[in-house]
Image 1 (cartoon, rainbow, N blue to C red):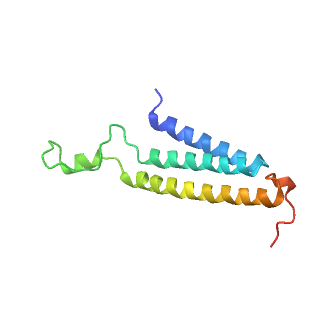
Image 2: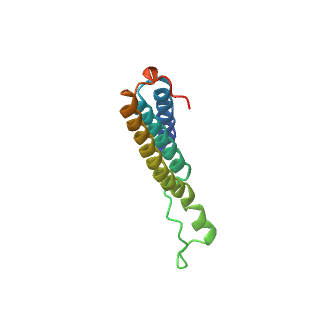
Image 3: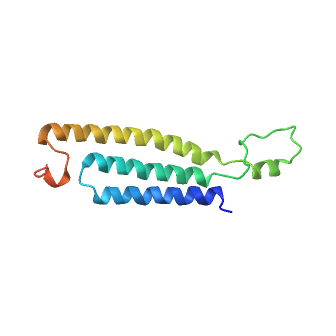
Length: 123
């Protein structure tokens, strides 16, 4: 039987590879930004999967629990990857918004968002 972790690891790797393929092969800047978002999603799934523990619990020690503190700690899910992913989601949203804003400004000035049609963008 395939474990949940194996499915999540493979899904995250597939998303990362598909996003990288989109970044390297697309000429439309909006599609490149969408491909970068797919890569971001794959990385976020990968980070959450790192902290996954089967039958894991929230990282809260209970004083009246029948298990010792060591046994309770071994069954707790690591909260650090979840916190990192929340931060990465917010940062990714901001980067996407700025990138799309720059693409809109580029379209207003040049009339296209195709990379092959953009010339003379030097400082």
